[in-house]
Length: 266
Image (cartoon, rainbow, N blue to C red):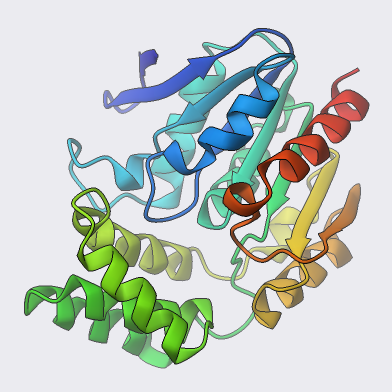
Protein backbone atom coordinates (compact mmCIF):
# COMPACT_ATOMS: atom_id res chain seq x y z
CA UNK A 1 0.00 0.00 0.00
CA UNK A 2 0.91 3.62 -0.54
CA UNK A 3 -0.34 5.75 2.35
CA UNK A 4 0.43 9.45 2.20
CA UNK A 5 -1.23 12.81 2.86
CA UNK A 6 -2.86 15.29 0.48
CA UNK A 7 -2.29 19.01 0.80
CA UNK A 8 -5.59 19.39 2.70
CA UNK A 9 -4.44 16.88 5.33
CA UNK A 10 -6.62 13.94 4.25
CA UNK A 11 -5.10 10.49 3.98
CA UNK A 12 -4.39 9.10 0.51
CA UNK A 13 -4.42 5.36 -0.09
CA UNK A 14 -3.41 3.29 -3.09
CA UNK A 15 -2.62 -0.35 -3.83
CA UNK A 16 0.96 -0.73 -5.05
CA UNK A 17 2.10 -3.84 -6.97
CA UNK A 18 4.86 -4.91 -9.34
CA UNK A 19 8.05 -3.27 -10.58
CA UNK A 20 8.97 -1.30 -13.66
CA UNK A 21 7.59 1.81 -15.38
CA UNK A 22 4.66 3.10 -13.34
CA UNK A 23 0.97 2.91 -14.28
CA UNK A 24 -1.37 4.88 -12.01
CA UNK A 25 -5.00 3.71 -12.31
CA UNK A 26 -8.06 5.78 -11.33
CA UNK A 27 -11.00 3.43 -10.99
CA UNK A 28 -14.57 3.99 -12.21
CA UNK A 29 -17.64 4.64 -10.12
CA UNK A 30 -19.05 2.20 -7.56
CA UNK A 31 -15.58 0.79 -6.95
CA UNK A 32 -12.47 0.99 -4.79
CA UNK A 33 -9.96 -0.12 -7.41
CA UNK A 34 -10.59 -3.85 -7.13
CA UNK A 35 -12.53 -4.02 -10.39
CA UNK A 36 -9.16 -3.57 -12.12
CA UNK A 37 -7.59 -6.60 -10.39
CA UNK A 38 -7.40 -8.66 -13.59
CA UNK A 39 -5.81 -5.89 -15.66
CA UNK A 40 -3.31 -5.24 -12.87
CA UNK A 41 -2.39 -8.93 -12.84
CA UNK A 42 -1.54 -8.74 -16.56
CA UNK A 43 0.52 -5.57 -16.12
CA UNK A 44 2.51 -6.25 -12.94
CA UNK A 45 5.10 -8.63 -14.47
CA UNK A 46 6.57 -5.61 -16.33
CA UNK A 47 5.07 -2.55 -14.60
CA UNK A 48 4.59 -1.00 -11.23
CA UNK A 49 0.81 -0.71 -10.96
CA UNK A 50 -0.63 1.76 -8.46
CA UNK A 51 -4.40 1.77 -8.00
CA UNK A 52 -5.66 4.84 -6.15
CA UNK A 53 -8.67 4.40 -3.89
CA UNK A 54 -10.47 7.50 -5.10
CA UNK A 55 -11.48 10.00 -2.45
CA UNK A 56 -15.07 10.10 -3.70
CA UNK A 57 -15.44 6.41 -2.77
CA UNK A 58 -13.61 6.49 0.59
CA UNK A 59 -16.19 5.80 3.29
CA UNK A 60 -13.71 6.81 6.00
CA UNK A 61 -13.40 10.39 4.72
CA UNK A 62 -16.00 13.18 4.83
CA UNK A 63 -17.84 13.66 1.59
CA UNK A 64 -19.01 14.28 -0.98
CA UNK A 65 -15.73 15.13 -2.69
CA UNK A 66 -15.22 17.66 -5.45
CA UNK A 67 -13.21 16.85 -8.56
CA UNK A 68 -10.41 19.25 -7.46
CA UNK A 69 -10.23 17.41 -4.14
CA UNK A 70 -9.91 14.13 -6.01
CA UNK A 71 -7.14 15.61 -8.13
CA UNK A 72 -5.25 16.52 -4.95
CA UNK A 73 -5.25 12.83 -4.01
CA UNK A 74 -3.97 11.89 -7.48
CA UNK A 75 -1.12 14.37 -7.23
CA UNK A 76 -0.25 13.23 -3.71
CA UNK A 77 0.06 9.69 -5.03
CA UNK A 78 2.33 10.79 -7.88
CA UNK A 79 4.77 12.26 -5.38
CA UNK A 80 5.29 8.71 -4.07
CA UNK A 81 5.96 7.23 -7.53
CA UNK A 82 9.15 7.39 -9.55
CA UNK A 83 8.54 8.84 -13.05
CA UNK A 84 7.73 8.26 -15.81
CA UNK A 85 4.08 7.73 -14.90
CA UNK A 86 1.34 6.61 -17.27
CA UNK A 87 -2.05 7.77 -15.96
CA UNK A 88 -5.02 5.48 -16.64
CA UNK A 89 -8.57 6.58 -15.88
CA UNK A 90 -11.83 4.69 -16.35
CA UNK A 91 -15.26 6.32 -16.61
CA UNK A 92 -15.55 9.09 -13.97
CA UNK A 93 -11.97 8.22 -12.99
CA UNK A 94 -10.96 9.28 -16.50
CA UNK A 95 -12.52 12.70 -15.94
CA UNK A 96 -10.47 13.01 -12.76
CA UNK A 97 -7.45 12.00 -14.88
CA UNK A 98 -8.18 14.79 -17.38
CA UNK A 99 -8.34 17.32 -14.58
CA UNK A 100 -5.05 16.02 -13.18
CA UNK A 101 -3.47 16.51 -16.62
CA UNK A 102 -4.69 20.13 -16.59
CA UNK A 103 -3.48 20.72 -13.02
CA UNK A 104 -0.03 19.09 -13.31
CA UNK A 105 0.85 18.07 -16.87
CA UNK A 106 4.52 17.67 -15.93
CA UNK A 107 3.64 14.76 -13.62
CA UNK A 108 2.60 12.39 -16.42
CA UNK A 109 4.31 10.95 -19.47
CA UNK A 110 1.00 9.92 -21.02
CA UNK A 111 -2.60 8.99 -20.25
CA UNK A 112 -5.12 6.33 -21.24
CA UNK A 113 -8.72 7.49 -20.86
CA UNK A 114 -11.37 4.78 -21.02
CA UNK A 115 -14.75 6.35 -21.87
CA UNK A 116 -14.74 9.45 -19.63
CA UNK A 117 -18.29 10.83 -19.23
CA UNK A 118 -17.22 14.43 -19.76
CA UNK A 119 -20.04 16.93 -19.93
CA UNK A 120 -20.31 18.20 -23.50
CA UNK A 121 -23.82 19.66 -23.37
CA UNK A 122 -26.73 18.68 -21.15
CA UNK A 123 -25.87 17.71 -17.56
CA UNK A 124 -25.36 14.00 -16.86
CA UNK A 125 -28.03 14.23 -14.18
CA UNK A 126 -30.57 15.58 -16.65
CA UNK A 127 -32.21 19.03 -16.77
CA UNK A 128 -32.22 20.46 -13.27
CA UNK A 129 -30.44 17.36 -11.97
CA UNK A 130 -33.68 15.37 -11.98
CA UNK A 131 -31.88 12.00 -12.31
CA UNK A 132 -29.76 12.70 -9.26
CA UNK A 133 -32.80 13.97 -7.34
CA UNK A 134 -34.81 10.83 -8.06
CA UNK A 135 -31.85 8.64 -7.14
CA UNK A 136 -31.40 10.54 -3.87
CA UNK A 137 -35.06 10.05 -3.03
CA UNK A 138 -34.73 6.31 -3.61
CA UNK A 139 -31.67 6.13 -1.33
CA UNK A 140 -33.47 8.10 1.39
CA UNK A 141 -36.37 5.65 1.15
CA UNK A 142 -33.99 2.74 1.69
CA UNK A 143 -33.92 1.53 -1.93
CA UNK A 144 -30.30 1.71 -3.17
CA UNK A 145 -31.04 -0.80 -5.94
CA UNK A 146 -33.76 1.48 -7.32
CA UNK A 147 -31.36 4.44 -7.12
CA UNK A 148 -28.81 2.57 -9.20
CA UNK A 149 -31.49 1.46 -11.65
CA UNK A 150 -32.39 5.12 -12.21
CA UNK A 151 -28.73 6.12 -12.62
CA UNK A 152 -27.83 3.24 -14.95
CA UNK A 153 -30.91 3.74 -17.14
CA UNK A 154 -30.98 7.54 -17.30
CA UNK A 155 -27.31 8.56 -17.02
CA UNK A 156 -25.31 5.54 -18.18
CA UNK A 157 -27.86 4.88 -20.93
CA UNK A 158 -28.29 1.12 -20.65
CA UNK A 159 -31.63 -0.53 -21.48
CA UNK A 160 -34.20 -0.66 -18.67
CA UNK A 161 -33.94 -4.44 -18.28
CA UNK A 162 -30.17 -4.27 -17.86
CA UNK A 163 -30.52 -1.40 -15.38
CA UNK A 164 -33.05 -3.46 -13.41
CA UNK A 165 -30.77 -6.50 -13.18
CA UNK A 166 -27.79 -4.34 -12.22
CA UNK A 167 -29.85 -2.63 -9.53
CA UNK A 168 -30.88 -5.97 -8.03
CA UNK A 169 -27.28 -7.21 -8.03
CA UNK A 170 -25.94 -4.03 -6.42
CA UNK A 171 -28.68 -3.97 -3.78
CA UNK A 172 -27.74 -7.53 -2.78
CA UNK A 173 -23.99 -6.85 -2.62
CA UNK A 174 -22.63 -5.95 0.86
CA UNK A 175 -19.59 -4.34 -0.80
CA UNK A 176 -21.41 -2.29 -3.47
CA UNK A 177 -24.57 -1.24 -1.64
CA UNK A 178 -22.82 1.31 0.63
CA UNK A 179 -21.21 2.93 -2.43
CA UNK A 180 -24.48 3.85 -4.14
CA UNK A 181 -24.74 7.29 -2.53
CA UNK A 182 -21.10 7.92 -3.49
CA UNK A 183 -21.98 7.14 -7.11
CA UNK A 184 -24.63 9.83 -7.09
CA UNK A 185 -22.14 12.21 -5.41
CA UNK A 186 -19.78 11.41 -8.30
CA UNK A 187 -22.42 12.18 -10.91
CA UNK A 188 -23.20 15.50 -9.27
CA UNK A 189 -19.48 16.38 -9.07
CA UNK A 190 -19.12 15.80 -12.82
CA UNK A 191 -22.08 18.07 -13.50
CA UNK A 192 -20.67 20.80 -11.24
CA UNK A 193 -17.43 20.60 -13.23
CA UNK A 194 -19.42 21.33 -16.38
CA UNK A 195 -18.08 21.63 -19.93
CA UNK A 196 -14.27 21.74 -19.79
CA UNK A 197 -13.30 21.10 -23.41
CA UNK A 198 -11.51 24.45 -23.69
CA UNK A 199 -9.30 23.55 -20.72
CA UNK A 200 -8.56 20.11 -22.17
CA UNK A 201 -7.47 21.68 -25.45
CA UNK A 202 -4.35 22.89 -23.67
CA UNK A 203 -3.21 19.39 -22.64
CA UNK A 204 0.05 18.60 -24.44
CA UNK A 205 0.48 15.14 -22.89
CA UNK A 206 0.02 12.18 -25.29
CA UNK A 207 -3.43 10.69 -24.68
CA UNK A 208 -5.01 7.44 -25.83
CA UNK A 209 -8.82 7.55 -25.95
CA UNK A 210 -10.18 4.06 -25.37
CA UNK A 211 -13.73 2.93 -26.07
CA UNK A 212 -15.82 -0.12 -26.84
CA UNK A 213 -18.06 -0.52 -29.85
CA UNK A 214 -20.81 -1.97 -27.63
CA UNK A 215 -20.87 0.94 -25.19
CA UNK A 216 -23.77 3.41 -25.05
CA UNK A 217 -23.54 5.80 -28.02
CA UNK A 218 -23.18 8.92 -25.86
CA UNK A 219 -19.84 7.67 -24.52
CA UNK A 220 -18.51 7.49 -28.07
CA UNK A 221 -19.79 11.01 -28.70
CA UNK A 222 -17.89 12.24 -25.65
CA UNK A 223 -14.72 10.55 -26.91
CA UNK A 224 -15.27 12.21 -30.30
CA UNK A 225 -15.51 15.61 -28.58
CA UNK A 226 -12.24 14.97 -26.74
CA UNK A 227 -10.53 13.74 -29.90
CA UNK A 228 -11.39 17.05 -31.60
CA UNK A 229 -9.76 19.19 -28.91
CA UNK A 230 -6.86 17.19 -27.47
CA UNK A 231 -3.71 18.08 -29.45
CA UNK A 232 -1.98 14.70 -29.08
CA UNK A 233 -4.76 12.12 -28.94
CA UNK A 234 -5.33 8.81 -30.65
CA UNK A 235 -8.41 6.57 -30.59
CA UNK A 236 -8.53 2.83 -30.00
CA UNK A 237 -11.77 0.88 -30.29
CA UNK A 238 -12.15 -2.40 -28.40
CA UNK A 239 -14.28 -4.48 -30.76
CA UNK A 240 -16.96 -6.56 -29.13
CA UNK A 241 -16.56 -4.74 -25.82
CA UNK A 242 -18.47 -2.16 -23.83
CA UNK A 243 -17.84 -0.06 -20.75
CA UNK A 244 -16.64 -3.04 -18.71
CA UNK A 245 -13.81 -4.42 -20.85
CA UNK A 246 -11.47 -4.23 -17.84
CA UNK A 247 -13.49 -7.16 -16.45
CA UNK A 248 -14.55 -8.96 -19.65
CA UNK A 249 -11.33 -8.60 -21.65
CA UNK A 250 -8.55 -7.69 -19.17
CA UNK A 251 -5.74 -9.09 -21.34
CA UNK A 252 -6.84 -6.91 -24.26
CA UNK A 253 -7.10 -3.81 -22.08
CA UNK A 254 -3.71 -4.52 -20.48
CA UNK A 255 -2.06 -5.03 -23.87
CA UNK A 256 -3.46 -1.71 -25.10
CA UNK A 257 -2.17 0.09 -22.01
CA UNK A 258 1.22 -1.59 -22.21
CA UNK A 259 1.66 -0.75 -25.89
CA UNK A 260 0.85 2.91 -25.27
CA UNK A 261 3.05 2.97 -22.16
CA UNK A 262 6.00 1.73 -24.22
CA UNK A 263 5.50 4.51 -26.77
CA UNK A 264 4.75 7.35 -24.36
CA UNK A 265 7.19 6.66 -21.53
CA UNK A 266 10.26 5.57 -23.51
